[in-house]
Length: 270
Image 1 (tube, rainbow, N blue to C red):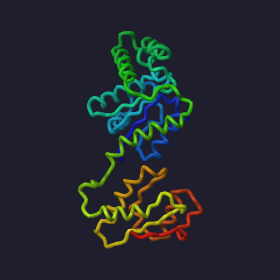
Image 2 (cartoon, rainbow, N blue to C red):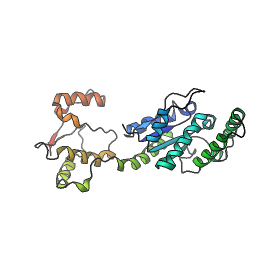
Image 3 (tube, rainbow, N blue to C red):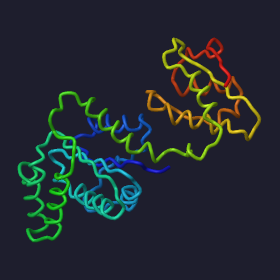
Protein backbone atom coordinates (compact mmCIF):
# COMPACT_ATOMS: atom_id res chain seq x y z
CA UNK A 1 0.00 0.00 0.00
CA UNK A 2 1.25 3.46 -0.87
CA UNK A 3 2.15 5.63 2.13
CA UNK A 4 0.56 9.03 1.80
CA UNK A 5 1.73 10.56 5.08
CA UNK A 6 4.47 9.89 7.61
CA UNK A 7 3.92 11.04 11.21
CA UNK A 8 7.08 11.88 13.15
CA UNK A 9 7.18 12.76 16.82
CA UNK A 10 9.04 12.55 20.10
CA UNK A 11 7.22 9.54 21.51
CA UNK A 12 7.47 10.19 25.22
CA UNK A 13 5.94 13.67 24.83
CA UNK A 14 2.79 13.01 22.84
CA UNK A 15 2.32 9.30 22.22
CA UNK A 16 -0.81 8.02 23.93
CA UNK A 17 -2.41 11.44 23.61
CA UNK A 18 -2.39 13.99 20.84
CA UNK A 19 -0.50 11.99 18.21
CA UNK A 20 -2.55 8.85 18.83
CA UNK A 21 -5.73 10.85 18.24
CA UNK A 22 -4.19 12.48 15.18
CA UNK A 23 -3.05 9.14 13.75
CA UNK A 24 -6.49 7.58 14.21
CA UNK A 25 -8.17 10.62 12.64
CA UNK A 26 -5.89 10.35 9.60
CA UNK A 27 -6.74 6.68 9.17
CA UNK A 28 -10.47 7.38 9.50
CA UNK A 29 -10.11 10.06 6.84
CA UNK A 30 -8.70 7.44 4.49
CA UNK A 31 -5.12 8.75 4.59
CA UNK A 32 -2.55 5.95 4.66
CA UNK A 33 -0.19 6.97 7.47
CA UNK A 34 3.08 5.52 8.75
CA UNK A 35 4.39 5.97 12.27
CA UNK A 36 7.19 4.11 13.99
CA UNK A 37 5.71 2.57 17.11
CA UNK A 38 8.95 1.53 18.74
CA UNK A 39 11.56 3.92 20.04
CA UNK A 40 15.01 3.22 18.59
CA UNK A 41 17.43 2.10 21.26
CA UNK A 42 20.63 4.00 21.86
CA UNK A 43 23.57 2.54 20.00
CA UNK A 44 21.46 1.28 17.10
CA UNK A 45 21.24 2.81 13.65
CA UNK A 46 17.94 4.13 12.37
CA UNK A 47 16.27 1.32 10.50
CA UNK A 48 16.60 1.40 6.74
CA UNK A 49 12.90 0.51 6.68
CA UNK A 50 12.14 3.71 8.55
CA UNK A 51 14.06 5.83 6.06
CA UNK A 52 12.38 3.95 3.21
CA UNK A 53 8.96 4.76 4.69
CA UNK A 54 9.89 8.45 4.91
CA UNK A 55 11.09 8.45 1.32
CA UNK A 56 7.91 6.72 0.12
CA UNK A 57 5.63 9.30 1.72
CA UNK A 58 4.15 12.34 0.04
CA UNK A 59 3.70 14.36 3.23
CA UNK A 60 5.62 14.54 6.50
CA UNK A 61 3.78 15.67 9.61
CA UNK A 62 6.42 16.65 12.16
CA UNK A 63 5.08 17.05 15.69
CA UNK A 64 7.55 19.25 17.57
CA UNK A 65 7.15 19.05 21.35
CA UNK A 66 9.29 20.46 24.14
CA UNK A 67 11.68 17.49 24.25
CA UNK A 68 11.85 16.94 20.50
CA UNK A 69 15.43 18.19 20.14
CA UNK A 70 16.69 15.94 22.93
CA UNK A 71 16.30 12.95 20.63
CA UNK A 72 19.17 12.42 18.22
CA UNK A 73 16.91 10.09 16.25
CA UNK A 74 14.26 12.76 15.77
CA UNK A 75 16.92 15.11 14.43
CA UNK A 76 18.34 12.46 12.10
CA UNK A 77 14.85 11.71 10.80
CA UNK A 78 14.29 15.42 10.27
CA UNK A 79 17.41 15.47 8.10
CA UNK A 80 15.97 12.65 5.97
CA UNK A 81 12.63 14.46 5.71
CA UNK A 82 14.24 17.64 4.40
CA UNK A 83 16.37 15.60 2.01
CA UNK A 84 13.11 14.20 0.57
CA UNK A 85 11.63 17.70 0.58
CA UNK A 86 14.50 19.06 -1.50
CA UNK A 87 14.96 16.04 -3.77
CA UNK A 88 11.45 14.64 -4.17
CA UNK A 89 9.20 17.56 -3.36
CA UNK A 90 7.82 16.09 -0.13
CA UNK A 91 5.43 18.44 1.68
CA UNK A 92 6.65 19.13 5.22
CA UNK A 93 4.02 20.32 7.70
CA UNK A 94 5.22 21.10 11.25
CA UNK A 95 2.91 20.97 14.25
CA UNK A 96 4.27 22.96 17.19
CA UNK A 97 2.73 21.14 20.12
CA UNK A 98 2.64 23.54 23.05
CA UNK A 99 6.03 25.03 22.23
CA UNK A 100 7.04 28.55 21.24
CA UNK A 101 8.19 28.57 17.58
CA UNK A 102 10.94 31.06 18.50
CA UNK A 103 12.45 28.47 20.85
CA UNK A 104 12.66 26.06 17.93
CA UNK A 105 14.02 28.68 15.51
CA UNK A 106 16.70 29.99 17.90
CA UNK A 107 17.23 26.84 19.98
CA UNK A 108 16.35 28.47 23.28
CA UNK A 109 14.51 27.12 26.32
CA UNK A 110 14.36 23.32 26.40
CA UNK A 111 15.94 23.27 22.93
CA UNK A 112 19.03 25.04 24.31
CA UNK A 113 19.21 22.47 27.09
CA UNK A 114 18.98 19.65 24.55
CA UNK A 115 21.83 21.03 22.44
CA UNK A 116 23.99 21.54 25.51
CA UNK A 117 23.66 17.81 26.17
CA UNK A 118 24.39 16.98 22.52
CA UNK A 119 27.53 19.13 22.61
CA UNK A 120 28.68 17.47 25.81
CA UNK A 121 28.13 14.03 24.31
CA UNK A 122 29.34 14.52 20.74
CA UNK A 123 31.68 17.49 21.08
CA UNK A 124 31.04 21.16 20.51
CA UNK A 125 32.52 21.12 17.01
CA UNK A 126 30.74 17.99 15.82
CA UNK A 127 29.35 18.83 12.34
CA UNK A 128 26.03 17.24 13.19
CA UNK A 129 25.38 19.85 15.87
CA UNK A 130 25.34 22.71 13.39
CA UNK A 131 23.38 20.64 10.88
CA UNK A 132 20.67 19.89 13.45
CA UNK A 133 20.46 23.56 14.43
CA UNK A 134 20.00 24.51 10.79
CA UNK A 135 17.26 21.89 10.32
CA UNK A 136 15.27 23.16 13.31
CA UNK A 137 15.55 26.75 12.11
CA UNK A 138 14.41 25.67 8.67
CA UNK A 139 11.48 23.76 10.18
CA UNK A 140 10.43 26.71 12.35
CA UNK A 141 10.33 28.98 9.28
CA UNK A 142 7.73 26.81 7.58
CA UNK A 143 4.01 27.47 7.86
CA UNK A 144 2.80 25.41 10.77
CA UNK A 145 0.04 24.81 13.25
CA UNK A 146 1.21 26.98 16.16
CA UNK A 147 1.27 26.09 19.82
CA UNK A 148 -1.61 28.42 20.68
CA UNK A 149 -4.51 28.23 20.95
CA UNK A 150 -4.73 24.60 21.98
CA UNK A 151 -7.97 24.83 23.93
CA UNK A 152 -9.61 22.08 21.88
CA UNK A 153 -7.16 19.61 20.37
CA UNK A 154 -9.97 17.89 18.48
CA UNK A 155 -10.51 21.07 16.46
CA UNK A 156 -6.81 21.25 15.57
CA UNK A 157 -6.84 17.59 14.51
CA UNK A 158 -9.92 18.14 12.35
CA UNK A 159 -8.24 21.14 10.70
CA UNK A 160 -5.08 19.14 10.00
CA UNK A 161 -6.85 16.10 8.55
CA UNK A 162 -9.14 18.23 6.41
CA UNK A 163 -6.20 20.12 4.91
CA UNK A 164 -4.28 16.92 4.21
CA UNK A 165 -7.28 15.29 2.58
CA UNK A 166 -7.78 18.28 0.28
CA UNK A 167 -4.15 17.99 -0.81
CA UNK A 168 -4.21 14.23 -1.27
CA UNK A 169 -7.65 13.71 -2.78
CA UNK A 170 -6.88 14.99 -6.33
CA UNK A 171 -4.09 12.43 -6.64
CA UNK A 172 -6.25 9.49 -5.63
CA UNK A 173 -8.79 9.42 -8.43
CA UNK A 174 -8.47 6.27 -10.46
CA UNK A 175 -10.84 7.49 -13.15
CA UNK A 176 -10.46 10.49 -15.44
CA UNK A 177 -13.94 11.89 -15.90
CA UNK A 178 -12.97 13.96 -18.93
CA UNK A 179 -12.00 10.73 -20.70
CA UNK A 180 -15.34 9.01 -20.06
CA UNK A 181 -18.10 9.23 -22.65
CA UNK A 182 -21.86 8.88 -22.19
CA UNK A 183 -22.04 8.44 -18.43
CA UNK A 184 -23.16 11.89 -17.24
CA UNK A 185 -26.86 11.12 -17.55
CA UNK A 186 -26.38 7.86 -15.66
CA UNK A 187 -24.41 9.62 -12.94
CA UNK A 188 -27.12 12.24 -12.60
CA UNK A 189 -29.76 9.54 -12.16
CA UNK A 190 -27.61 7.62 -9.69
CA UNK A 191 -26.88 10.73 -7.64
CA UNK A 192 -30.59 11.53 -7.43
CA UNK A 193 -31.15 8.16 -5.74
CA UNK A 194 -28.55 8.86 -3.06
CA UNK A 195 -30.53 11.32 -1.01
CA UNK A 196 -28.39 12.56 1.91
CA UNK A 197 -31.50 13.94 3.62
CA UNK A 198 -33.31 10.61 3.63
CA UNK A 199 -34.70 9.36 6.94
CA UNK A 200 -33.64 5.84 6.00
CA UNK A 201 -30.56 4.47 7.76
CA UNK A 202 -29.60 2.33 4.77
CA UNK A 203 -30.29 2.80 1.08
CA UNK A 204 -29.37 0.05 -1.35
CA UNK A 205 -28.83 1.12 -4.93
CA UNK A 206 -28.36 -1.62 -7.50
CA UNK A 207 -26.74 -0.91 -10.86
CA UNK A 208 -28.03 -3.51 -13.30
CA UNK A 209 -26.81 -4.41 -16.76
CA UNK A 210 -24.63 -6.69 -18.83
CA UNK A 211 -20.99 -7.10 -17.97
CA UNK A 212 -18.60 -4.65 -19.60
CA UNK A 213 -21.02 -1.73 -20.02
CA UNK A 214 -19.41 0.39 -17.28
CA UNK A 215 -21.34 -0.40 -14.09
CA UNK A 216 -18.22 -0.43 -11.93
CA UNK A 217 -16.91 2.77 -13.54
CA UNK A 218 -20.17 4.61 -12.82
CA UNK A 219 -20.16 3.43 -9.21
CA UNK A 220 -16.50 4.41 -8.77
CA UNK A 221 -16.95 7.93 -10.18
CA UNK A 222 -20.04 8.47 -8.02
CA UNK A 223 -18.11 7.25 -4.98
CA UNK A 224 -15.25 9.66 -5.65
CA UNK A 225 -17.68 12.55 -5.98
CA UNK A 226 -19.57 12.05 -2.72
CA UNK A 227 -17.01 10.58 -0.33
CA UNK A 228 -16.17 13.96 1.24
CA UNK A 229 -19.78 14.31 2.37
CA UNK A 230 -19.65 11.14 4.44
CA UNK A 231 -18.12 10.55 7.86
CA UNK A 232 -17.50 6.83 7.26
CA UNK A 233 -16.60 5.52 3.83
CA UNK A 234 -15.60 2.20 2.31
CA UNK A 235 -15.33 0.98 -1.23
CA UNK A 236 -16.04 -2.72 -1.63
CA UNK A 237 -16.00 -3.54 -5.36
CA UNK A 238 -15.67 -7.27 -4.73
CA UNK A 239 -19.00 -7.44 -2.91
CA UNK A 240 -20.80 -7.71 -6.24
CA UNK A 241 -19.49 -11.26 -6.45
CA UNK A 242 -21.15 -12.21 -3.19
CA UNK A 243 -24.75 -13.10 -2.55
CA UNK A 244 -27.08 -10.69 -0.77
CA UNK A 245 -26.88 -12.65 2.47
CA UNK A 246 -23.09 -12.53 2.49
CA UNK A 247 -23.08 -8.80 1.74
CA UNK A 248 -25.26 -8.21 4.78
CA UNK A 249 -22.89 -10.19 7.00
CA UNK A 250 -19.84 -8.32 5.67
CA UNK A 251 -21.48 -4.93 6.21
CA UNK A 252 -22.64 -5.81 9.72
CA UNK A 253 -19.12 -6.83 10.68
CA UNK A 254 -17.51 -3.77 9.05
CA UNK A 255 -19.93 -1.25 10.57
CA UNK A 256 -20.08 -2.98 13.94
CA UNK A 257 -23.86 -2.98 14.11
CA UNK A 258 -26.34 -5.69 14.98
CA UNK A 259 -29.52 -4.03 13.71
CA UNK A 260 -28.41 -3.80 10.09
CA UNK A 261 -31.52 -5.02 8.28
CA UNK A 262 -31.39 -4.17 4.58
CA UNK A 263 -34.47 -6.29 3.84
CA UNK A 264 -36.52 -3.39 5.24
CA UNK A 265 -34.45 -0.71 3.56
CA UNK A 266 -35.54 0.75 0.23
CA UNK A 267 -33.80 -0.73 -2.78
CA UNK A 268 -33.49 1.40 -5.90
CA UNK A 269 -32.25 0.49 -9.32
CA UNK A 270 -30.16 2.76 -11.49
